[in-house]
Image (cartoon, rainbow, N blue to C red):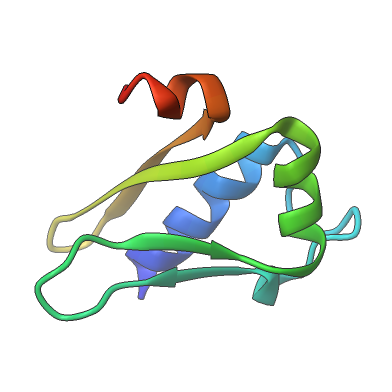
Length: 85
């Protein structure tokens, strides 16, 4: 749970919005199907902010220890994504 919250915060920092500013907590969903890596799903204000920045894909890493969680995210644009970076 803490890892997903950290991931949501990382996404909002990458978008430069934070919670508020037209972006709701529920606009960012961190989804992970069994056996897959976590993925970012956006809606509402978060999706609009990502589109305005040209974000076409996300790369997300979540790590946990006994009492801590952290996440890092890369927001990729069309040019970067096309090169496979």
